[in-house]
Image (cartoon, rainbow, N blue to C red):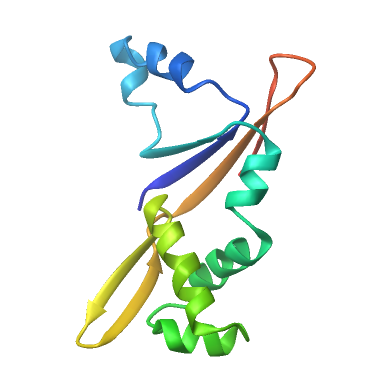
Length: 125
């Protein structure tokens, strides 16, 4: 299963330049999401969305309705969050009949936070 890398404060152009070297291509993650700063990250990946991702990584085969009941959230809010997460590539939505089944589209998420006072990258996996 693929690994998703979330980079906060990193430069996408710098990463693209590294891919010009063929030896770096195989080491590149399957999917990378860039955020300008922590403020943008927390606005887009809110605590509720992160909780939703955590739940979906632990439980499979649930409909959107079941997920919303389990998380004590309105179905409309869960559905909206799922579509936003799908647009980022973090969730896959599978429709069977009139039911929608969300699932995580990754095996792991790695978050890299660029320190503001140096070029050092802090990584959590």
